[in-house]
Image (tube, rainbow, N blue to C red):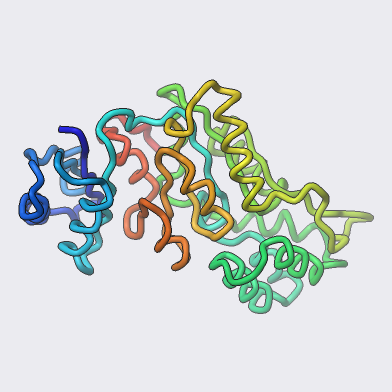
Length: 297
């Protein structure tokens, strides 16, 4: 079969009857739909198919699933396993927006989080929103950075994602509109090869309210994807990108597999693939990895 539809759900939530319904839905549209293949029992499975585009298969799957907690990703069967992973950090590899959490130490979390939400949904210019939020934190004791890091949680499945792709030869990097203080620690903890982000200005133990140039924004994320692909001799089709905000959209659309992970509405609507229910191991299942191939967290 030329294509595959991968279904992923929280553990124990994917039923054989659901796979049968989806296979029938593809057949009703004229597809040649093969026998489902379990990647992880009651969690992830492939349905091979031919005769439909990935977009048609994904739309049919979402219509059939309705509100069921199942993610559907359709891809060409050839070249599923990617050799470059480029991941956003905030609300993707970690569960929080680290700048919002940092703002809590200045009593400004709600105010800054409101700006973050609008920026990540594409309602505000990223650079302007970043400068405004960081500016509000001028004078904050730099010790708040370490306190914020202590409470930062890794997203379930992130460690398995990085370890598994590294074990199979992929280059793994973080690219974030957040800050090096956090991306460096996340990269070290999870085993990313590299990290790219912004640098907060600090002087005399206080935040200056400035971000050092150059600013890593939407265009810089796309440029990083292209640069890393070229450096590793890979076509963009061999890249997997993942993120949740409007500043991720360009790199999601340019990669062979770009996944909007629990994304803001504008991003979820525009991305070719998205994960709304499962954890980050869904990115491995989408590449055809079986449960026994996934590195233990």
